[in-house]
Image (cartoon, rainbow over all chains, first blue to last red; front, side, top):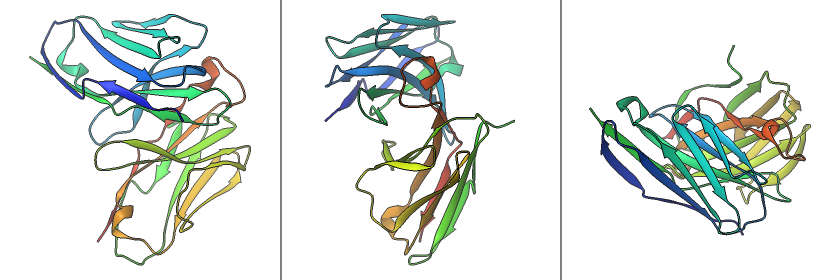
Length: 112
Length: 117
């Protein structure tokens, strides 16, 4: 059974810092992994999707990496801004299933 | 145009009532989902439909009944509401889960906040 964990659960950093969010999953047989952002009272916005054959994906100041064999993904945020404050969730699509399993989320606060 | 829209956004109702949440996607996707987010913000899948057919029912009480009249709609009906049903319910869709790749990006609605009193 796939389990997805995110560390840390919460993070507070000063503006301008580079930071890394971690996502671990127990079953490495995955199709892809997706990172989302959730603002308070809002739905989820897809940030990056990494296919199982890829090692990383980049979008602007965001870079997501995937190490399938070790069951890990990281989301790197460069030069953080107060507008980056949100909860970040990773979700894994395990091979042979019709669902995404979500991690526990990291609540990020970037201080001005 | 909103890609995945769900109504109502807020719903306050008494225990024992029956209520429905509607969801529509205009992305032409084959697969639709209902997720429940609890008070600890943990997202858990409830149902998955592919081309109007139920694919996943994640041990959800049978008071919850999804209905997919067509590929673009997946409604959630809840009977005999209980206090523990209070949560945020998210509808989502993706192109198809039978393939890998960028077409599997999953898109979420804004959520429906259900409060049972």
